[in-house]
Image (cartoon, rainbow, N blue to C red; front, side, top):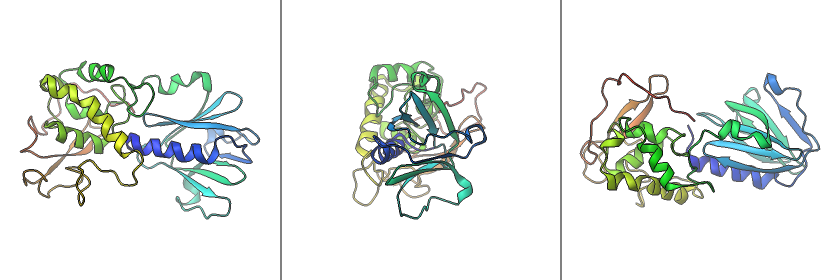
Length: 276
């Protein structure tokens, strides 16, 4: 699942390439929209909302897309070869006189009236990189279910929008708690730091080609993807285990010495599915 900064970068590429220009080509390779033709319409712009992309066209129409695990939007020049994947993986093509945006492996693609975009994204919590950001509301959302494991609460886009699996692991390390610690067990001062810390991390990385959370020259991340290498702080081997509701388990990294709280164990009897 892409992180919020990755989606923000994709939105900016699409906006810079297409906004204010009329389409000379549109092609949607999903059965439901195979006959939709937007040729001649002007693209008003693309905006991110958490991990969702909203591309708006004149006439009050919005294309809502979500990358999920493998999706990507690629932008090419008029004479440039498309290199995002084989043709059968293409789901959408938006072409202007000088740029073509190609959507590969898009897991969500739907059209909405622009005035009804909330049907697709209204469930999301405050957007870490959006104008609706509200730290107090994000914290209240995280603490609303005190028994929920911290890692699952951070991934739930209804609490705050934009955190993916990488930032989940990194935030838990920086806050000094394992991803399995119940949110309600976090000391109040550390819980209060979470929304602001998450926002600073995403803002610091939204313009970077390589994501970095450490501030170190030769190491980009503290724990994610580093098992079983030594922790950068204490040299204890980093561990990895799956965390999730069974249908969406994700590899989760942590340092058992630097982070307090329980490790992975049998799944609790009550699970709340993460909403993207």
